[in-house]
Length: 255
Image (cartoon, rainbow, N blue to C red; front, side, top):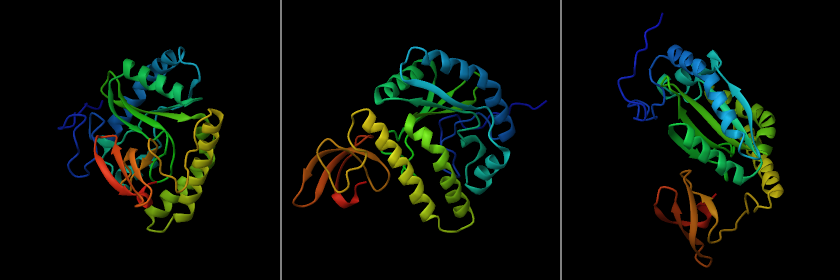
């Protein structure tokens, strides 16, 4: 029987070598996986219960264990120490609207301790533009599980996109360029989000070359921000980032 060996640094601290956030209770991947797997039935049941009162939100997928080969690849090949890996156990919720997404986020925060969150729902992540609102939630046995809240159209397209994602990952691990596969994944995700926005009567996801006051943008470093001032003649804008910074940038440097 394995002994639970707690990591010397608390969950939420930064792992010193990688700079990544510690989200699991031990630095032993086998123990972390066993804890996440054991917690998955309760995690799934709690998600299903909170979704009963939220129209337009469905528990679309759960996974109680990560493939060993992929876990080893993350730890050894991608520099993610075992205690920083987020998805030993994972779930995805598909939402029909931005309002459903907001309701799910609020309900999750009422029902789980949240270790961290990342909002890529509107513009997508910097590399693949995959849209999701991600939360890392802690379970009673001190493991943590990943949760992605995803626009329904994006989730439906993800099976196609995942092929290109794997091509990018495999090429980069081998030291090769993967620009073409990355561009294909981005195009699939952008098109899926356009369909989601169109169905919800929202704005286009990306208006190429247009920077207007009030629009949400992404800076070159990947930070999300909202435009508060635009100078069309000098082609500069002042933006306020989600962490409260005020930054002046050139239009060409916004995404």
